[in-house]
Image (cartoon, rainbow, N blue to C red; front, side):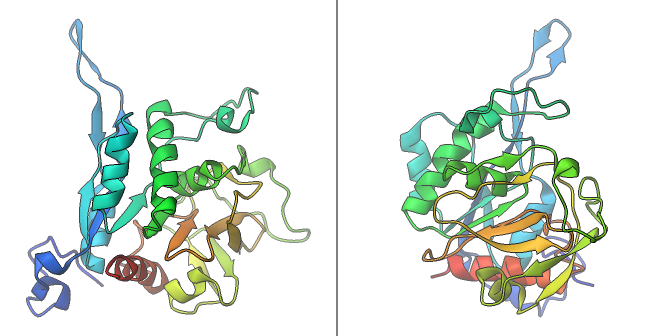
Length: 267
């Protein structure tokens, strides 16, 4: 069992602990956004935060995580990209379908226009600068939409492979839900350590539909749901639909992905 480098029980001989902080690449992480809560008759400020599981995964893989703050200033967003060695986009609320012209109602969806606006610019700037980019769940859906793709907004209604078992994709974060079947020779295959398939968790009710420009599908679940996209020709652009930030300590392939991302950020 791995332990987080920020805890008190790590082996002092751990190579990650011995590494000088200056040697760690800076991994800029997009934040969660929470509207301000009421405090009596007053509304408090909005809140931005990063889940500790992302911090732990990046620390343990050898990176130095830094939370970005949401801004509408495109010059500031470009400065984030210039200063970062790599960019990570985590999960969160659904991407607004209006970004690809879908004005229909989608019951059960929750949206965050603040993150949508910030991350669309951030993603395009990161790709233009060819910065290593790793996205998770919502982040992967945002990557696809930023490049002109679309999403299916209700995974349970997406047609499955005929004869396959229909797995629960919606609410298993700390337990495995289904296998992913990985394209041979893909970035995902190399990043996870050469696995052809392995079991992952799953907590999404939206998924990639039409692929964005330059993206390819590199993994599906064993019942046919898109699970990973990547961008050939770029240094490292990888988006997974599952949540390796919750399983890096128990799944070697998921931890290998984090290490591969951090290693790409060193170059």
